[in-house]
Amino acid sequence: MSAMTFRIVLFGLVAIFAFSNIGCINTPVGNKFGVPVTRDKIISRYERPLDQILNSAREVLSRIGTVTNDDIITKTLTAKINKRTVYVTVKEVEPLVTEVVVQARTSRGTGDLTMASEVDKQIALGLVLPQN
Image (cartoon, rainbow, N blue to C red; front, side, top):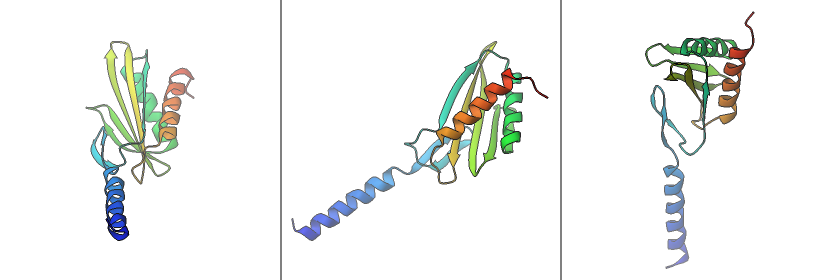
């Protein structure tokens, strides 16, 4: 195998590897284009009723960003915060235990775990601190 053939084969393998890391990711509103190998999700459970957590999530997302979708059937909120798309899904696990899934993605399709954890923390603080 000559040096030129080796370089072409190596370039082809690198290109295949680069394009294999880009694909579809699963979001609460359907599949989107993105990088699937990055972490983007925080899952928390609270001993609070579903409506109370959903109201806290609405208030947090409207305070720190712009709510773009509020689906009352699937209990999913979508917001834009600092050019990132944030999805918050709330579901009841038991009568008084509610699960919150916060997923954040940048405009390039990579996960933003820092933003997801910040939104999750703000939702938790909204449940504990009194509202003005």
